[in-house]
Length: 52
Image (cartoon, rainbow, N blue to C red; front, side):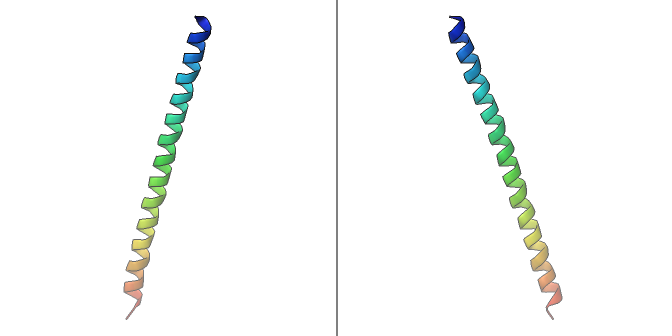
């Protein structure tokens, strides 16, 4: 019984850690994509401004 509880606890902990890592990864990727789009906008804006 105790072994089963220990296994269940470890499994839950593993799932929780995996979930948190997944959330962090999604946040970072989304932030990088957002940053890239902003940089692209600035570049295109600058490009339009520089072109006569």
